[in-house]
Image (cartoon, rainbow, N blue to C red; front, top):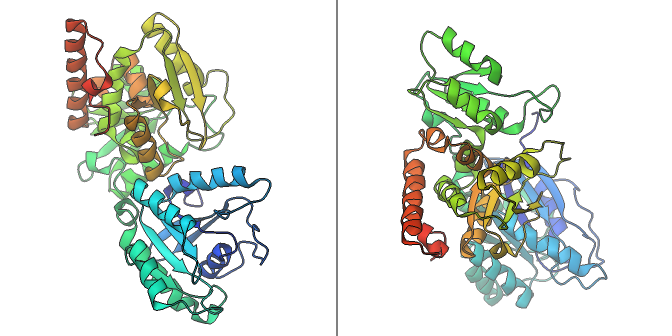
Length: 436
């Protein structure tokens, strides 16, 4: 963990037509040649990612995309990737040049508005042509006043351009990047103790811990708490050795049943996956979605969504264990499909429920957008940790640190119970899953 993971960096997407100078602007901001530039249109053929420290913002990653008006042989494939970057971006930077404002630029503005993603406009190449006052006013109006006029080749004025850009980024950057929310620190008293249960199995990377565990340990330390890390077999004995019980116990979801059995009822407990359901997405929505698992029936389609692309082992948690536990719970078969990495299907309405991983490799904005897509199509969405806890009958126990989420889950179950008692097959609005 020598570098901040990309998923924790502010994601800044660079969009615009071919040859307006997106890559040149990236080089200007970076102060070095990180992207290939050329007067030949379409030089950037794929998304170029550049991670850097952009003080005072901190760690960011720039996403330099192919031109929106690419007409090459592979244009459609490139543009599909460009559109995915719109979903990923925390801030959209629209690069144009004097006099160039038309359908392509207005499309980016509409996409930004639809996603409620802040937009900064850059009028480039002012060394070649001075933009008119009317043009600058038009662009500034579309960008909410966030406008920079510069020449990406004028490194003598780099500081002025960069300072203007930083000013706009600071004004629109999501709060979680300027004031990151705690992962678990707010669940602990000053000087508190958290016990973390970390299995060492085939999926554990050799010589290190996985990212959610590392982040949880760091967050506890940042909040002046002590951390005791044990394997599941040592939990019960370790707790007995303490003069006082811990303030919180957190475990890997795969050992949640044993953790609950070994943790005193007076001690709050949860899982790393549930912590990330709050940190990266919407815990209330995930709790509501977990209650909807009672609606599953044999033959239903279930989407398992993984944020990372990895080689699935024999007993993979998302592809093997969760489907197996669902089938055991239902006493029948289901149709399971897997979307991994940044692939996320557009036909969400065809699934009964989306079960998402913790999303440690996604940005919060990406996760929230995925949740929004599911809700807009009336599809329940929850995550691995809540699903496993539900199927193993301990979900209320692991939601005790989160009273609002616990009540949301209970309320959704009460509605389902009424639905069953009335013998009606009501739509998902019963669970409040459809967007208004």
